[in-house]
Amino acid sequence: MSGADELAGLIAQFTGEDGMHPTPIPRLTLIRMSRPTDPLPDLHEPAACLVVQGAKQVMVGQQTFVYDRAKHLVVSVDVPIVSHVTLASREAPYLCVRLDLDPVAIAALLLEAGQPPAATARGVGIGLGASTPELMDAAARLVRLLNNPDDAPFLAPLAEREILYRLLQGEQGARLRDIASPDSRLAHVNRAISWIKLNFDQPFSMQVLAEEARMSPSALHEHFKAITALSPLQYQKQLRLQQARRLILGGQLDAAGAGHQVGYESPSQFSREYARLFGDPPIRDAARLRAAPDASYA
Image (cartoon, rainbow, N blue to C red; front, side, top):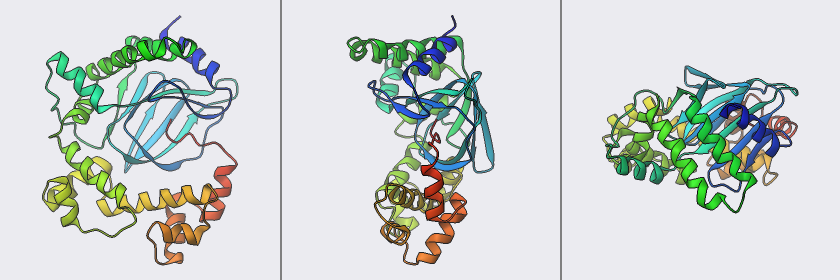
């Protein structure tokens, strides 16, 4: 049995219903969807996503990435996406392994291998690589440990380490090196992103943000847009709307209250921008999401 076939069986075993299923193994999530989904905007965090059945499409700016059993997705920065499962059915559901990328583990692996971390990748912070048999075998060993919880604390780090090694040797290795490098342009943009995430509900100036990123305002604007496909202000707006959506979906606030809490002074402006991003006004959008599980990070 191939690693991909074993992975499919393991994911089916540990995911009885549609949705995202966090596991006791750190950074490991299993995803299952039994039908195609509507395109949904979201913010994808750094991760590697290996599909073993079905297919998914992710759009970043004007670029489209389609991945399935043959191609995996690597995301190196918190990047806004629009994604949807394109191939799935009850008989053959979409099955995916997501491993969040740990910068410390990547840096330690590079240090031990004597490889320099600096290898700046170009374009947006997302890319596709070939899902080799070696990579799938390593992923199967990691997921297999869910059947042996006493072994997992000792053996899971070894399986994760091999997965990272295989990814570093693959087509998206430069993106992983960027994650581990404190001097890459990704690291500078990441500092700006971290500041925006902490202060998303407050106004800011490019000068302040550039100082946080340790870049000039013009350089930050150029590199920020190249990596995320958004300007810093557009990025902040997406964070505000995403947080408002979570507050409404969780029943914590109504639309007006959620908009105000994330920094909007005008309820009508909030409603317009919300509908422009998510396709429906806040209340209708929340009702739609409650009716269907979300696999936007898969």
